[in-house]
Image 1: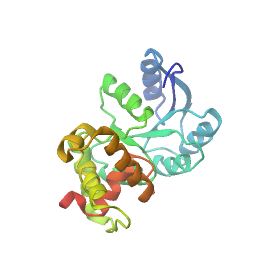
Image 2 (image 1 turned 120 degrees about the vertical axis):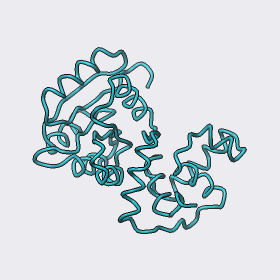
Image 3 (image 1 turned 30 degrees about the vertical axis):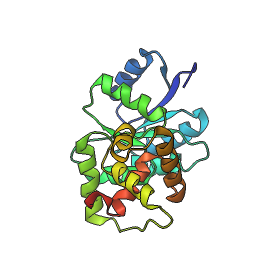
Image 4 (image 1 turned 45 degrees about the vertical axis):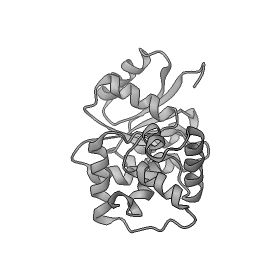
Length: 216
């Protein structure tokens, strides 16, 4: 993201929350709010017209909930990255949001600096899945209901990489664990994205959980 600021669409039914986040974002160099939505359907319309880089989406939205709106927004050509807001007691939404195309999620009680970091992380094309508590929430949802999936066409080495991604390791940690270079790892991850029809790292985590790699 060189030169141009990261353009953000805020989608939340609480005007006070939106105003607070807008003030925070607009006071931060390199970030700007381009539109605000108060309903899920409004978020879809504004995402199409303003073409933001990142949508910050509340789960509980009137008219159309945040999960359904997320699926509609991320299915469009040239879709923005999408960061979902949730709370600890909504663990089922975590899995559903990622399946719908979200690149990650943050908790409503996140601190301002961490929220800004989350937006930058997602805007840069990464998935926001690092905190151990979020991995446990995803695992809990998947172990309850998700079907097992096969990893057709995935090589043994790519399976090793996917296993470590599923467990939440960073690229640097995977490079050290498997004794591979950064370039080689990027090739493996690119192959996994293609073979598993995954949009990003968040989708690879889901594929890994569904394949049972969190258990091995």
